[in-house]
Length: 259
Image (cartoon, rainbow, N blue to C red; front, side, top):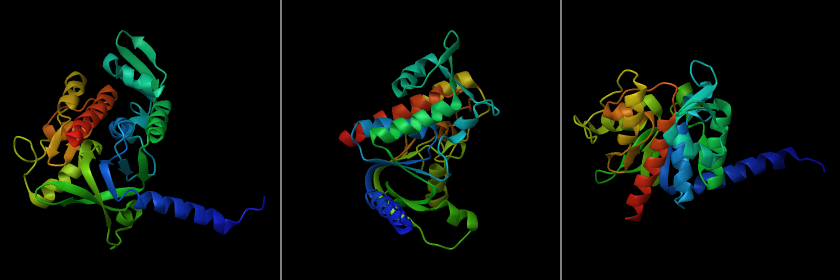
């Protein structure tokens, strides 16, 4: 077989463009491809919802790649083990209730499982704004990460979504955009982001699930964004709450869209 360089280019451009055009109007848009976002995308896609994830970095997985302080091991508690089992991620019980995984296997398995379930992922695309109509977020404003990094004055494109998940981690970037653009309108005590508290794994792992909820009409938080918005502690290199939060956000949104 003789390879044609232009056919190779055409195959990439044609198929990617079709993917993007098919993603302009969707059920759920996820911002941030860390463990919570990937888990949410997996369960939403399994429920038959048209779900797309946007990750501004080249790679997905958030901070999970490095485990704790570049030791590529992740710790999970007993409650999250069924999710690991569902993804086929191998675990080693360190002691009663504490399970270890290889961080590289964990990230790649979450990504592969979510894509196979139907999640569409666009990397190297960031969210720079939201669309708000009648006091509800109805879509996202997107641009290339390279455009932002180069500080080029190039206008973005938009997509429409019935629900948005902010799973951007500590920065809670979608929540921050809402506060910056329209003021203290979040569904928190003050209407603004309360900010994450100092590390406390026991409390942080519990509150990250409790804080997984709607923060503004049409926008939900999952993962560390949940504690950043509602004032929960950070929890360091234990990741069970991330998976449980992602699954919880999918359950909440699926129920709301079905109702």
